Length: 242
Image (tube, rainbow, N blue to C red):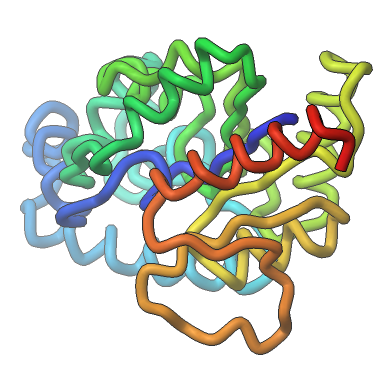
């Protein structure tokens, strides 16, 4: 069995999102003498519209690679470079995150049982930055790899994005079959439809108890920690030859 997780609202919960919280220290360090904070916030809103339009086209808008250069283009100065730690800092300033109850203990049990685990996320921030955040929350060590749409250029439910991850995990674990991969996510339109189209089983974290009208979800759970019972029921069935 192989588990591939979504990131946001699947492994870590976002309590509050405010892009300006990340933008303010960036403005103070690089653009305070070039524009007002209100001006750069307004420009950030314009770029958010661009971000949304790119997502509608199935494309990602990477923050460091594509968005930061636009600030330099508008206000002057050199293009800002960010280390992985700085990128993670920025993302955490914009997103007030917390552990989802029970997830760390569940991952620890899966890790002890040597179940391969990965992360496939839609994010404008790189996989290295996402992995850094997972490490800061004490759960990064459970994952063999993290993939982000910021590096790939396309977003879920893109079939090619899923296929890339699926091929990589099966290459690392040739003893496993595609049929034994479970993708776990909370967003039906990206996670569940994407996994279904890629031909793997999908576990839908259906907190709002919505109807699965397309019947694409293999399993439904109320919270991520509900995955524990699914995994061990499947493992027991395999042992019994079912």
